[in-house]
Amino acid sequence: MNLEVIERDIERTELYTCDEAFLCGSAMELTAIFSVDGYKITDEPGLLTKKLRDEYFNIVYGMKEVYSEWLTPLY
Image (tube, one colour):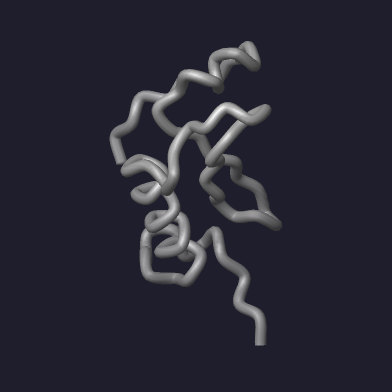
């Protein structure tokens, strides 16, 4: 998706003023964060969160052939 990504520790207060935020993991997949410590971030997932979530689901549901080696079929 040609996104610049920087992995770093953040301060909790950075979340209070962010435009959008999400969590990802094998159980929750990719889930938007709507508030942190009572500070509202947004009412709905942001555009980047939606794009990443859509791309994630396209990959895990086998719709992106280039990533097919990442998948293990279950029958």
